[in-house]
Image (tube, rainbow, N blue to C red; front, side, top):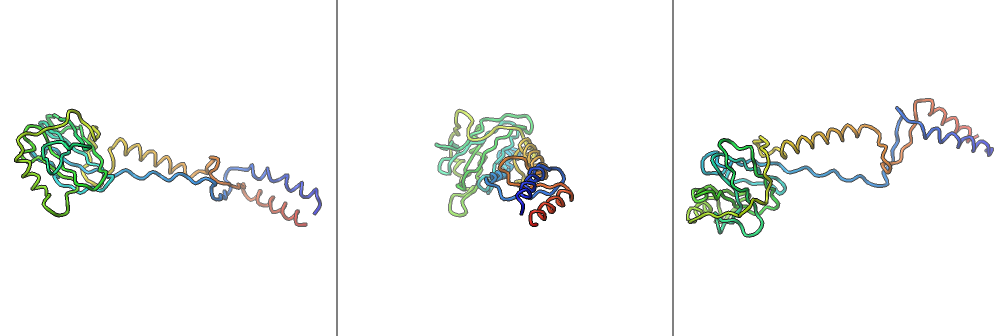
Length: 239
């Protein structure tokens, strides 16, 4: 092969590589892997506080780790605080949650949302007046067997003289009602809308070739003309 042939052949390569547009893109594996997509947020489980009198509805609920409990408040005034089975109507000593008193003349748009971090039973109560003693208690992830049942918790609560609560709300998020009524729904409407918009934008962007460095090595050609030119150059080199 004549040395000038090699020089001429190589001179075409920048031209071919610079082409862009409607041509085919061949992409090799990236030198740096893409970050994994964030896992989805947990489902939201709806609990009504005082809708059916002095009760939580539902009063017993099984919730997977990572899911959220969204408490919706009804008139006239209620609260939700985590307790222990051994000491109903009193706040848990460490951790837990407390919503503070929520007063309303109708269904409140204010909600209190907590996230379930483990599968341990979560006993809770309403500490307004004698609501707890009247049976306004509940449990998340009740024991599957044994004597620690919701009915036993109610019975023990009825024997407590006075309820007590923490000084300030903690352990959850006070926010606006999502108007979601099933446990299969995801996070609040504002967050869900933003997530959907982001997902749509990401999906649309994925259809276009990436121009980000390290996104992969690509070779682009435009139409049949570039392909024929490349074949011609290769044939010339082989002569």
